[in-house]
Length: 307
Image (cartoon, rainbow, N blue to C red):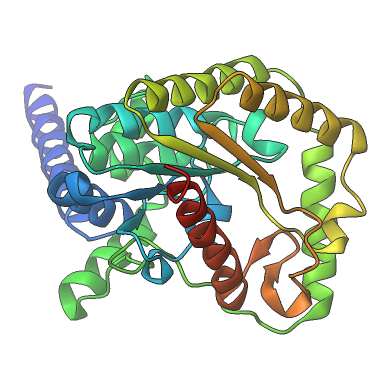
C-alpha cells in the first residue's frame, strides 16, 4: 500500500511539474495582449488619442492614419468595464492624452466580457495586463483555457519556428481583409442583428455605470471623449431590433448631454460605406478602416481647433 501511495505521489508530482512547465511556456508566447500591455507600459505618456472598445475599434481604427500620436488599446469582445480598468491602470501616465475614442452600440451596453461567448478572454487581462476584474480561478491560468493538444501545438510552433499569437500591428490595429463573399456579409449581418436583438437587460446597469465612470474619469483629467456607433451593412441594420436600438440611443444621448467633454456620432447608416468596406455584416475591413479612421482624425482636429 505504501508503495502505491509513493507511486501516486510521484505521478502527481510529475503531472504538476509538467503543468507548470506548459503554463510557463504558454505565457511566453507573444500575443496582442502582451504587445499592448508592453506598449502602454512604455509609451502611455506620449499617446494623444487612445482607441478603446471591442472588435469595432480593434479592426476599424488604424492609428497609423492619425495625425496625432495614437494607439489602439481595443481588443475583441473588450467591454466597457475593461476599458475603464485600462484607463485606471495607467492613470498617472496619461500626461499627453487628449482624446479617448470608444464605439457604442447595442451590445456595448448590454454585454460584459465574462458573460459573452468569448469570456475566456478574461484570462488575458489577468495574465498580461494584471487587471483582475474576474474572480473565476479558471481565468488565472492559460492551461485551464483551451484544449491541451492545442496548447502543446502552440508551444511546438512557437519554440520550433517562432509562430506567435500576434495579429495586430505595433500600434494595436488588426487588419481584416474582405473575402469578397456577399453571402457571408448577408448571413453574418443577419446573425449578428438577431443575436443582439435577443440581448436581455441583465448587464445594462453595469455597462451604463462603466460608461459614466469613463466619462467622469476623462472629465477629471481634462480629456475629451468621442463616442461613435460604428457603420453596419444593411443585412445588420435591416434585422436589428428597433426597440433595442432606440433604448441604446436614448441612453447615449442623455449621457452626452450630461457631460460637456463628450461628443457622439451615429455612423450606423452612413452612406460613405458600401459592401466593399465590410469584413462581415457589422465589422469593417481594412479599406473601411481607412474611412472611419479618417473621420475620427478630422473630428479630433476639428475639436482641437475650437480651443
